[in-house]
Length: 243
Length: 262
Image (cartoon, rainbow over all chains, first blue to last red; front, top):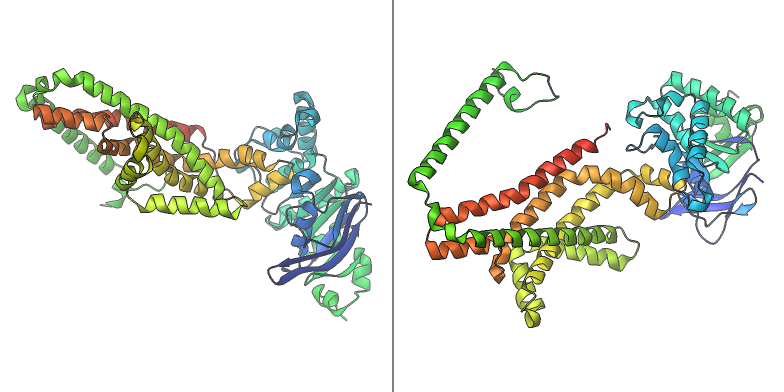
């Protein structure tokens, strides 16, 4: 179960971004997609989110057993966090987090009190409840990214998808947030896919790492396994391993 | 002395420089003197208002018609502009091209020519009784093309990631436009929107060509009867100002309200 990616191929015009990729993310697992620029890792994540669609005709995406291959993004209930936060500039922090709940059809919408409770629980969880009334522009990069995460979590996503979430932050904040995210994952065990080009980040955070290059998965395994037994020269060179 | 600093400022300084203050005072004094002199001249015999006085009710009627025409055309043009802007973003190729052609045709030809075509070609067979309606339509059709470009620029100015994050937290396409794109785009387009609205009001004067007795036509008539040109056309200009100034002020105040730091 978890997320199953089956035989996904994606071409942009004539460029093949993903070549028949198959990958299983275990339930409760944090899996990192690691690779250089242009390796297809972000494309794969976006296809899982439904922001992009794989070449029609073959391939499947399953969330906990449900086929969502042709569901558009808003139906998938996947929490997505962008590299550049993409908070709604015209809403304050509280509204940003609450928004995914507010726009639900009346039958599925929580009451105002429930929404407030849930938003403040999430804001506490990302340790920013004192900023509820602020606007995104008044926050630092690290704070914005934590709010983006809270917003993604508010809709109780079935999977969490992070696209280079710490890429735009400075080194110190990046390290803090990395640790914080790991701890957060320990508490929630939400099935998570995490895209990064930073191997240190991938190896420190993830349960398992999938290494991509030129639209193919080169190797997948837990960090130790990959470092000790790289399967091919690409992985070996990419990780900068000696002999 | 730094001349640029008199006219440009990089950031809002709490106090204007001494030179800027001096220039302000001199200019204000000159303006007051000139206006005062003109006013005194006018009252003391330069302007003969009594010659146009019997026609004030006509002016009033013409002004009301201009107002009605403008408001009607404005509402209609917003609808047309919005539809054309969205059509240009449609997935249906035909819609996209139709909207594109509409915009190019309208922006590439003079309004006067368009009015004549609407009047003498499109509605040639049913002119009587629909004069004002046809004029309003011509005006709305013209302004709609400009508005659609303003709206489109506003919509496209909102980053892709805003749209995508809206989709990712479960907003439908309609909701994404309604709650995420439009509110942010509106703020961007307020200044050009105000300009376009003012243009529309002023352009309504061209409808006099097809015999609608709105403000300009009325003033021309009064001038033809009384030969008091200045006394006929000064109120005309003032009449348009009364219509356009509130729009300008209103959008300024609105801009202040929807402002947020970026």
